[in-house]
Every structure is written in structure tokens, then in C-alpha cells.
Amino acid sequence: MCGIVGYIGYEDVKEILLGGLERLEYRGYDSSGIGILNDQGQVSVFKDLGRVSQLRTIVDYEEKASIGIGHTRWSTHGEPSKNNAHPHQSKNGRFTIVHNGVIENEDILRENYFASFKFISETDSEIIVELINYFYELYNDVELAIRHLMNHLNGSYALGIIDSQQPDKLYVVKNKSPLLIGLGEGFNMIGSDAMAMITKTNKFYELNDQEYAILTRDSISIFEITGAKVTRDYFITNLDKDQVNKGTYPHYMLKEIDEQAVVIRRIIDKYSDKRHERFIMDQNIIDAIKDSDRIYIIAAGTSYNAGLVGKQLFEKIANKPVDVCVASEFVYNQPVLSQKPLFIFISQSGETADSRAVLVNVNKLGYPSLAVTNVENSTLYREATYNLLLHAGPEIAVASTKAYTAQIAVLAICAYLTVDVKEFDLIHELSLAANVIESICDQKEILKELASCFLRDTRNCFYIGRHVDYAVAMEASLKLKEISYIQTEGFAAGELKHGTIALIEKDTPVIAIISQEEINLNTRSNVKEVKTRGANTLVISLKSISSESDGFVIDDVHKLLTPLVTVVPTQILAYYAALERGLDIDKPRNLAKSVTVE
Ligand code: G6P
Image (cartoon, rainbow, N blue to C red):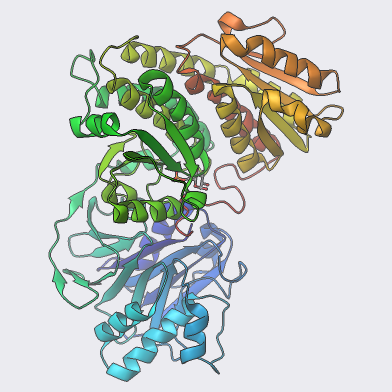
């Protein structure tokens, strides 16, 4: 979703902005732009539809300038177009802004302040820049104008602002939408996440909601909306800039699929003692889980699907009841809660606005919460009572793969640590699962052929499974639809005959996942039901319960950890299905990696 980058320093700003935007591409966007301010107070704006590579071709700027802002836009207000792309400028040219977020009271602001004003774009962002100008003309003070602006805006906004009359200042404002300040020597930066700035600095200041900051080349001053100065320490991220490259891989997604075995091993390492004999975790987290009478898992997308597996893990290992809730539903339709709930927020990015909206309510209600996220110091990480990191390394492809398996592994450890008498050795079982993942990744050629045979020309496809395989079927189908645009759903295998079977016609691909002995025969009879109606069936099974005709057989792992391995062939199938169709695998249409608006 929208990405922001900004720079003030002495180096050539154009290249820094374009490079920053390229590192934000993974968030998803449909247009991009930059605004550069030179020492003479002239602002040049370049923007266009499409990729940053397209923007590069139109940035015709040879002057020396060292302050600027850039933006990748994922449309919410107004269609994707050059006109609606950011930066936006006040009509008199004085102020230029980039904005991430949604202004909820845009109509009221239009009516109250700009009833007869002709806006150039259809965006809510243009109102912001005109409002800054309006308040500036009223108070003759930019800082005061920004404070008034903040007092008038409802909704989410991260803003980078340049004032053509002040080529030595970069203003930044934040409410709800993510934004970090990067601290450099002789320069300072802003960015939607650390990734945008990581080649320049690993030191960051966080901005809280309703705060603004003024950056010069040598200073960073942070203020509350009242104007009171805030003192805050910077933090250092251990994000490795080399991890942000795809190396020799054609796509990040393939690299990230392959990394899953290493990620599981890293998780074992990070959450166990030196000799890898027992897991260790903050005792407060274990106590919070033990003390709760019910866990509410809140998440979206792939993280929600990982939550479905997490429910099985908590219920089967720790006998703890769990509800898994779609964040965007929970926030407006909260169920009756138990007496002592614990909220677990699962989120790769730690920024998903739907999940955050729930966390804000949970915090207001005073309930304990745990964020399980891949991004240290992300919003959910900071705002939840407790946090656990996934240690998956940066996930760049929009379609989440290694974060999903990491989420399952971390949830398994949580559940495992809350029981006193351990019935199996989770360290050993996770290590075995990592080995099996590796062996699946070595069989890509087989999966490539299966993708070609089952998914090359199809319009739709169904994944089916029972028990925990149903949860994996949901994730498998999400992966496939996200990147191949094949219409696909994951179904409870037994539920097919209660309606969906009507959709089965000749050659409809139906892929069954079978990993549990107790459902083996039942799911197989569902496979027969669709096969006799013409479906093209493929079974992915575990060795001990496999049958000769199964299309892809996986070595056995512990019965509670099967999702870690059964999901992998489905990720690879999705990858090759999209590749066959010549699609943009890492940046599928319409999707954003980090969805920072509700
Ligand atoms: C977006 C992405 C999905 C992701 C979901 C939740 O919709 O396209 O891939 O699963 O957000 O993201 P989170 O960062 O909270 O896990």
C-alpha cells in the first residue's frame, strides 16, 4: 500500500528517492512520483502511472538538489492516474506533499473550506495540501499551520511536506499510517518503513500518532500536536540490506519459498537455549496465555489462515479454546468476550490497519495482547502488551509464504510452552519439518509439471481438505488466486456435496490435501465424488497414508505440524501457475503487501 520516502541532506536526492521507492515497491502500488526542491526554492514534480521503472524514464532532472519527497500510490480516492498520483501541490505552488492514509472527513472539509475551489485531482490528499496553505495564510507560520491541519483532519495520514520557501526543512506528520524517521550523518530521511531507508541508515526514530517532526540536514525535532517537544531515543534495526536483494532468483517469492527451512531453523535457534535442548520465551507471555480462559486470534489474509492452524495447535497441545477472527469483521462486530481473554495479533507486517483498529479497542478495554509479527518496532509490535518476532527476514513478495510457516512455528512454540508435561519434542519435530520443507523445494520440477498440467489453462480450481488440511486448503487457494488470478476457493472436503459440487464440470481441477490418518478415507471419497463428475484431481498426501495414484507425496512429519509441509507444494504450484501465465508474480495486480487503510 502507499509508500513514502523523503530526504534532506547533501547528496543527489533524485537517485535516493527513486531507490527508496524501488524498495517500497513490494508494498503494492499503481502509480508513483517524486518532488524535488532546489536551493532557489523551485519544486519539480514528476509522476506517472505504473512502475517506478516508468517513473525513472520521465525524471528529467539534472540540477543539484538535496531535498525531496517520493511516493508510491495504491488508489483509494480516485482512479489510478497520473493526475491522482502524488506528490500534490497547493495551487500557488508553495507546499508539496505526499500522503499515505484516508481522510474520513474529506467531504466536510471540502464543504467548509473549499466550497467553490477547483481541485486538480480526485484525491483526499489534495485537500490536505490546500489546507496547509490555507492555515499558513491565516497564521503566517508553517508549524502552526501543520498543528491546525492535524486538528482538522479525521482519519489516517502519514505526510511528507516540503515548503518551497524553506529549502532547509522537511516536515513530517503522522496519525495511524506508518512512518519512520531515519537518522543519518549530514542527512535525515523519512520512510513508510525501514526498507525504504536501509541502504542509507539503520538508525530510526518512531513517530507516534498525532505527532509531527521537523527535519533539517543535521537535526530532528519531534513534537506533539500541542507543539510540546518530545524527547525520544532512536532504535537500531538489524535489518540486513543484503537480505533485501533477490540474488540469483528470478522472483522474491521463489527465494522466500526456499528460505522456509532456514527460517524454521532460525526460529528454533532464537527461541531455544544455547544447546537447542529446550525452548525459552518471556515468562510473562507464557503466563498471559496460561492465565487466559480463551484466546482471540485477530488477523487478515494469510496471517488469518495461519491463525486457523494456530487454533488447532493451542487446542490440541494446550487444551486452550481459541477463536480466530477476521480483523476487519471483529472491529465492527465484536463477539461476546470471555472473562479473561488474551488477544493474539498475527501480522507479517505489523501494520495492517484492520488489525490495528482492533488492537486500539483492546487496549482501551484493558485486555492483554500479544503481537506475533515479522517487523520489529512495527505498530502492532509497539502497541501490543507483548510481542514475538517471526525472524523470517524481510518478506518482499506480496504473496506471503515464509511468514506463514514462521507464524505457525512460533504459535506452536507458544502453545507447547504453556503445558508442563510435554508429549513430544517440538525442537526435534520442527527440525524434521525443516528438512522435509527442503526436500519439497528440491522437487520443483515435478511441481512445475503438475502446475502446467492442472493449472495452465483453467479458469477455476478448488482446494479441499478436512481438519487441519482444510485450513491449509484456505491458504493454498489464497496463494493461487493472489498471483495467478485463477478463481479458486478452499473448501471443507465434506461440505463440497452440500452445494459447491454443482460447480464441478469436466476438467475442473480439484486439489486435495490429505495429512491426517483419521480423515484419509473420507477425503479420498470426496475426491472420488468429484472425479466421477469430471474433475481433474490431484492429491497431495503424507507418505504413511499415501496411495499410489497420489500426485505429490511428502515425507511424514508430526501430525500437528503437517501444515508446515503441506502448504509448500501449494505455494510452488501457485508460483508456476502464475509463471506459465506470464504474470507479475511479486507484485500481483490490485494487491498491497502492507494494507495500512481500513
Ligand atoms: C495483505 C496482503 C496479504 C496479507 C494480508 C495481511 O492483504 O496482500 O498477503 O496476508 O495483507 O498482512 P499482515 O502483514 O497483517 O500479515
